[in-house]
Image (cartoon, rainbow, N blue to C red; front, side, top):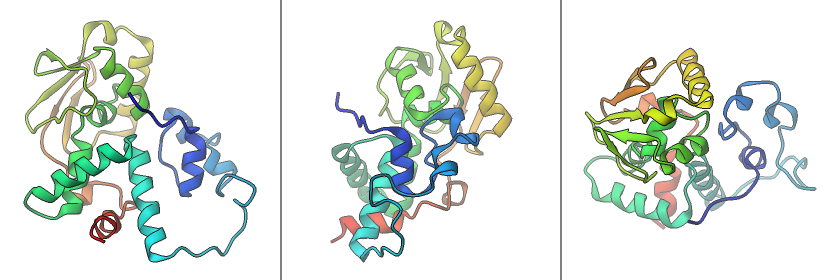
Length: 209
């Protein structure tokens, strides 16, 4: 399976904002954005660089891909599905990305980061409606019950991730029982419930060229 092996902190610095790829480190002053808020590389500190319209669209697409940890081919397939659905393509895109099993597991606190949540899924650590599912891109639907398998509940890493997620609060579209390590995907998130720093309209413009 193909993966993006670029250093997580370099990806955040390249996009100029926190993408929360390193778990709890992103919430401390050890975050690379806090220490070096400029792009990596020898030309990273040069200011005044202006992007063209295409450049802005491309950067936004790369940012969203990095946030959700998916590669170009899979992202294009997700965008094509968003176009087929009724409603606004950009909002459909974000809803499809947030309904991926690895994203839901991360939001429920089953992993400190999306990469860790994906690993838990791949290692048979997550059940959907009582059935073991190990496909990170599995589409969770409203009403589905997602929970940690017994062997994953016992891990200290999972307990720590759940406690940290509880302290930050869970999204409105999820209902999570921390003690049982179980949650319900109540509905697809509304656009105003998702980060305002994401400009999905630029991605729609990019693929509409």
